Image (cartoon, rainbow over all chains, first blue to last red; front, side, top):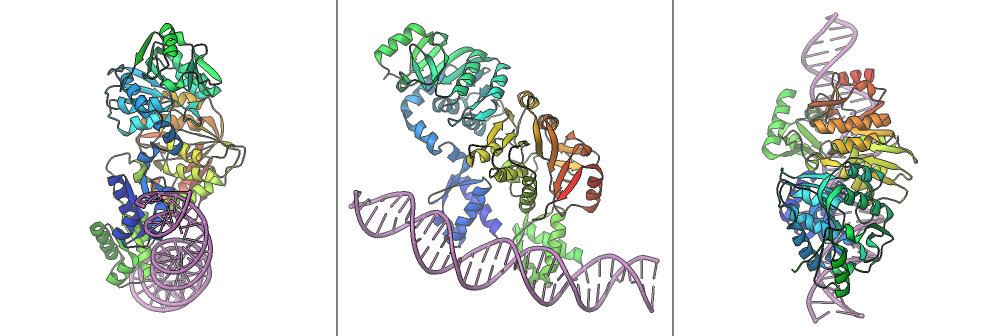
Length: 257
Length: 257
DNA sequence: AGATTTACGTTCGAATATGTTCTGTTCCGT
DNA sequence: ACGGAACAGAACATATTCGAACGTAAATCT
């Protein structure tokens, strides 16, 4: 059997099952483990699979749980999914919505994928990819360009200029930190500027924010609390924080799982 | 037995089994390995099979006009890597370069990752990702935003506007098709527009183009041959095509493995 | 016929593919 | 936390394959 045929076989197996293990391939292909590894090297070098300990997984599956991203996205997971579900209720077919970068907005994106006739604008590659993967043709996904921050946001002058040329029904923002005085914050100056542009381009601002974000301070604010139309959080939020938020934001929504 | 008959026999074997090995053909045809190889060269030159180490595999023709990235990425692999290597020679530290979407430019990106102090502008998520993965901090990667085509290019008004605001030392373009009359072509109108903007934003236009692209026609042209400063191809290019290219492009470079 | 082209085989150095051995790493049950 | 089992990958050995260069013979041209 030719090397190329083996690699086709491996690709097919990965496509079908999402993952393969080296030991399985050794049996099914009748070659040594080293040969299988070298095939996997070749395939991963071409970006077609991702090597992991014990075998390989499909690149799509894997991009959704890259270490740093996964580490974050598992924190407060039930809260985040509850918040994302509540946010998805606010989206109706025909709308044009914006999504900032972040794990909570990413979770929201997985739900938006099932709503039809939607235009989604985002500056996060991950968000764009999850929408693209399940895309039905009625969805338009617009990726805002720029340079990439460690937290997977595309930012910078290019991003700001692109966002300013757009007008959205609503924008859903994740935040790194929030408090009563400084409003919404991020730890990255350029990301703050980009987020600011997103806020200004939308008629409605919806903030997705689990209780751990309260009191966390980022270097840079990008919106005041009184600019927020809807803030969705979880029941564990500190009562004092809750009072302050109820005073200032348009509507406070508590998402129960 | 005539050469033509042998080649028919080979094609038939490939069709039936999806692949053949040189050693099998040597036995079944009763000719030398060298003769078999020359037959395979002829067939692969006409795009009827794909040569691989040990033999040849069938080139499954995708009936859709835009094969997906994964489907294309293993076609003409050795040629593409040779072309990419030659292209990387043209890039020096300190430059700002553009990369269009495509498998050959993707291959080039893996090489650019090793050159320092570079600014790379691209409208392909996959190109951006390969640069990001191995990025040393001296590299700036700018992703051009837009909506995504099946071939992984981000296109549309947002993309065009972003590109127009930039100025590059050189742009490296992959093409879907090329010929003497129509120049460089793609099968997607919006991608053509975006590519056109890339061409206009750069001082130098370098085209990466393996021999199978010659004579392939896309619906939309985005540049004439006389606008091309350097065209890099592989040695299997048809001599007549080669003559036409030498006449019209600034410089024709043939990349040997 | 003589010259030229074409097809095919042979030789040989280099590239490629694969398996084996060995050493270090990672995983997982206790 | 620990120890055995599975796994990864480097280094080496071997066999296969590749393709350039050259030789020869048949076919084709003039």
